[in-house]
Image (cartoon, rainbow, N blue to C red; front, top):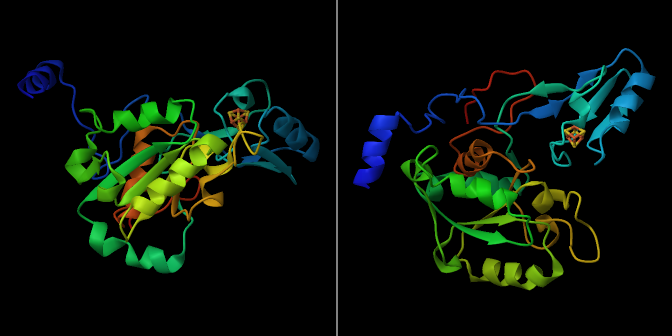
Length: 251
Ligand code: SF4
């Protein structure tokens, strides 16, 4: 602990001030593709064809982007006709029941214990989740803690496309958690299966196995986006703002 204090004081490594202030440090987010105006329909179709995962859809004089299918390959940012890009990180979205949403604030506003389950991820999402306990993001300052047992968990954080080998483990972990409990899908694989599912080895989404409350898209989502999901769950942050709105948001 003393070592961390000395390192912080001498190297000037500081903890992010998010959510009290927007984080603008370089590298905290890869950004995301957003709706883009095109001169004609043909250009929109051509731009959509650059995406290997079908995340871009053509429409009349524009293209739309679905971040829950984007793998951040950046193919749509090269060439003459490119997608618009927004460098934000408030990507989490409430997808659960509205009654559960209304009831979520009170018991969890101050503190939350999280059980992480890897249901066949490539480890990219887990690497980002690990960043949350390091000095820069330090989620403990916000009352968020990882717990090794589902018996102590309030939130089940799931990464990966839910392979058939991990499906039973996911169901057992969910069943072992006390009520009230919430489920958060982190990363595109957990939301839609992305490039891995549905297939012969994976179901394709957490929502197809257990009730889902919050999804954090991204491949992988940066640590601030995951933090946004936890803050949304506790009612301390608003959902992903519309494109081109200021980064700040109030619950
Ligand atoms: S970054 Fe890659 S995956 Fe994402 S929208 Fe662009 S082309 Fe598609």
